[in-house]
Amino acid sequence: MAKRKGDLDRAASGDWLVKKAKSEQQKSASDSLVGHALLTQYYNKINTLREYILGELPSSSRIRRKKIESVHSNCSTPSEKAVCNEDELALGRYLDSTLVARREQPCPATKRALDLRWEKWLGFSQKGDESYVTLSDGLKGAIYSQSEMVDFVVWLLFSHEKTKRWPKHLLCDGFRKQARTDGAQTGQVIPGLYEHYPNHRVRALKKDPWPQILMLLGKEGERIMIGLLADCAIFEPVKAGKDNFYQLCGSPTHELEPLAVEALKTSRLASEAAAQRAVERRPTEIALARNRMLYARAALNTKGNVIFGLRHIHVLNRFPFKAPSLSDEDSHQLETQVSGQDGDEGVIHIMMYMFPRQFGLHNVFTSIVDRQKTAQMFQDYTLREEEIAKKFGGNSEKSRRAAKHVPKRLRGLPRLIRRLQVLHGRCAYAAMLQHYCPVLGQVESEMNGQAGACEKPPLHSTRQSKNLANHRKRHTPSSAPPAPTPQYDSLFDLATPISGVSAFCQAVLSRVVPNEFWGECLVQDHNKTCFLKNVHRFIHLRRFESMCLHEVMQGMKVFHLPSP
Image 1 (cartoon, helix red, strand yellow):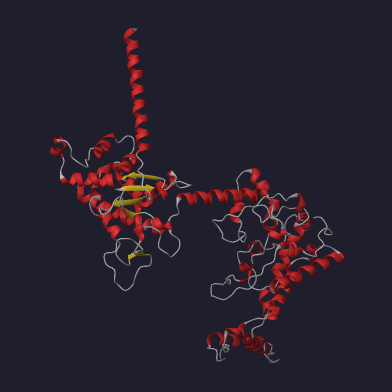
Image 2: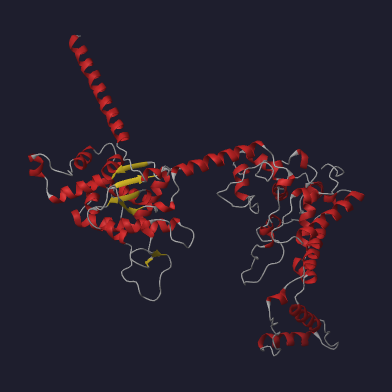
């Protein structure tokens, strides 16, 4: 019993020693952060290159950790002088003097994202997963792998950038996306990129001592090196002066905001969001976005011609009216289509766009505007499919039932929504535009074409003569001269008066919007006339003038509208 008790005491003391060693190691790791007067204003974590590598190594790499720790930066004792050489001393000094700086991201990379980056590296290097073995071919293989990893990081940063500009990263400086066709570049190794002018930082990361550092990392060397180059900033010491560094990798420091400014902005945005969440916007605070309506780009078809009317992504074009099928259950289906109680998904989808607040979607009255998506006062609600799918697109029975549910306040509107779909499908937007906003040359050419088309054929033509004429028309080139292209001396010849634009908009709204939307009897005519007058006012506004929702509703008799 005494022996067994002694063993337990020794085991307990051993566990205590292990725990103490681990706590001291964690404490030393937290105390190993480097303090620099300038860099600490922009980065949360600053370590030496040796400390960063030791922190990224897996816990199982004890031999590799001891090997990295054994690289000396100076030889003070005679025994160390006997073992060290100049190359090892230079490598040790570089590991202890080079700084690695990082900023804490609000959304750190997940394991899935890191695995996806590793898969991209395997596809870029065109080799299998060799993370379980050390580098072969010694220093020669390390030099080749280091050069290839630097090229991969440049390619990866460009692949993340969706715009035509180069990414804000020092390794991407000098590279361009479009491949040149004049044959000036030679020896290109990065797919889809060419070197517009030399990048000395890229060349420095491919030379000594970086291949030697990659050899020290062992099995996980490629993962650690890719993460170091893609996610961190590297600073090399400069001999001149004191505590001066040269940035070798990472986003340029002058492009970053100080941590104090960023924290202040975050707290201010949080306070603004809390204030918006607490107060509902009034109609006077909701202004119409004129620049989205009047200064937007025209929608074009595949031939480059302008498409008149609503854009193809508009909800009324994506969910057109579908006539009821009378093949089966004729009477029941017809009654449900007319009454609007069949739960038609297209009609409910349109109602979600028209009345988002009733369905619990993002709206201008109570929702917070995401400033990362838009710089405007309100978000663009042209497409809500992602939001609707997130809220009602589940596979459960509850989600499917919620997608077909009409709020109690909107129970009587499906019939009017179907009427809106029918009127939108019948509206000839191009013909109405040509009528209210005509272009002089196009009107004359169309009138000539219509006059030629209205000429009647001779009475004695028979079916056989018609077939013969059609056959000749198909096999004989047309001798009719093409219609002359109208010529304009100035862009002002194509200008349309404001009164014509106003008349076109009022005519379209009068034809598309059902009259029942405005009310009944005298209230209907009053509300419709008042709304069209406000449309006329809105179009006549000058460039920097705006109109709010309160002005749009001014004069309309809302309380006299029948409840849905």
